[in-house]
Image (cartoon, rainbow, N blue to C red; front, side):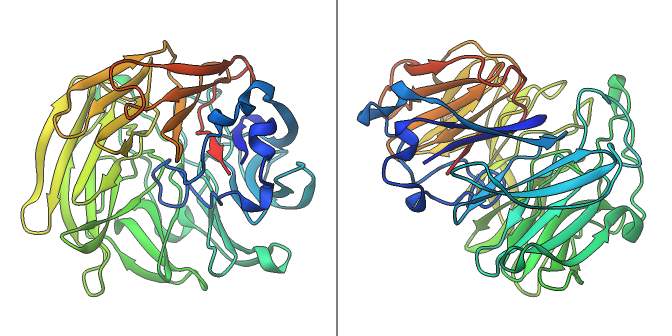
Length: 415
């Protein structure tokens, strides 16, 4: 098991005996945004009970250029994107050692061609790669809309490529509210579903567009046609037994069908527009339910029950929020980290506990032994008990501070 965090200019692997016991070959793969199920829930133990966190240390660092794209890990290899010298680069490295195995780069601007607002606070690619375990194909999306497919089993050979701006004539995102216009280019991470790759394109012809994962040919477009929401990526789940996908688009919480003959049909669109039009936190979706949250003028977190015939029914809403961290739903509780670590009852929305002062950036992973791994502040790493182990109060087991010396805007990875 290894804890991985990618941040602007460098990739750092944090390792100690907790991360090496049992051997790297037995580690769970982390093939895309928020893990295999886009939930930030790992089947690996934190190994806290083994006492191994006491020897936590930085094992290696790897310079990958500018960007805030999270790495993905599979079969002992790590893949990550970065930008430098007018090029985006996809790096493949040994996850255990950080040794670079190969790099592939192509010309790309530092910002998307229609970028506006907050330049200097971010740069380079933001979208996290998606790796298909079945085929070994890796999908990357740059900030300027460069969507590429690479064959990791053939030395990273390019399979296909297209630029979404050029192919779909995507307009700049409109100004919303008093805070001005924000357009960060493409930030959302592609999603593999069956034989297609689903991308939050935000075109006038479809918010979501599905491509054949082997050829890149368009397969379907969503009924919804609003701009992208600067979120982390679409999330698959079932509604009344039917495969669907949830994404927090520019206009609100969108749920669309994925079943044959109904691909892209809108199940519901819950209006939810922020002043910045930045719905950053990825929704949590499970068993006909979705939890969405944002900050700014829409400072709230809400649970919706989704049905194919009735759309979205609000179950509860709280005046609490996550500006960045995507919520985790597990064993009757909702967890997220923003300004502090929060735990709510998933049925009622009532606070179970909160604690541990934080800043804006932060992310959580929930482990198989009911612990939370937190990455926040200026690179602080913590181990926290879940409500299953500590039902009355926030309980912190471990903290190592200032590992990165930078704001960790992208989530920690466990593999």
